[in-house]
Image (cartoon, rainbow, N blue to C red; front, side, top):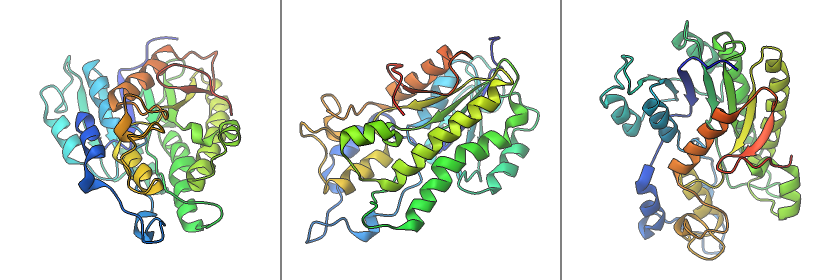
Length: 305
């Protein structure tokens, strides 16, 4: 494949705790408490619409490569605004790259299509990274269709909306597309793992994997490869809230893993930097002969459906 245009779109780009996140995981003041009967309080059950990995790290690393980065989000954040103010990221092309923030992009709504098309008009997109996602602690036994539906809109339909919006920006034979997915959407891994929590997330990610497969077949006709990437359990605010709500406020420092035990976690909790590096490496190595593969970010291992 020819070298892609040096512009990338990253969705869900308004969050990022960087190196400070590990300390936040270990802070007792930030731990969520269960009710008297041990149940997760209702107030903690609604999802948080955050990125699956730290897109701020994706933006930083792409900027360091000298790329133009279009950071799409519902609304900006202090972290993203600070990154935008760094030398070389103020909108002019330099060796340090250029950052543009696109606000008002809610991938859970059809409205994002027009916003993205207007903001990216005329920009050839080399890499499209669909990263926005949402995770909730819910179950099939206590079915909440509203919570499940919201996750489906963001996790399954969101990447399709974004890809549809930017179809005209992709360059035949040069562009690459990544859906940031999850092993929690794997039928095989769910069956073998014997875990049934976070039902809406699992169902929506399984649907996202199928959506990625279908889109990969379409894009193959334009010689544009697509990859589905499982970043692993990444030290983000979203994973922190999920772990604490699902495990009664513990910091995860036990041998079972979790945010507090990042170095030895059985769940493989990794830093945002490592996850972002892995995602970009998978894109670097992606070839048209590998359409629709489902891979682990940091190792490149092909995962089961």
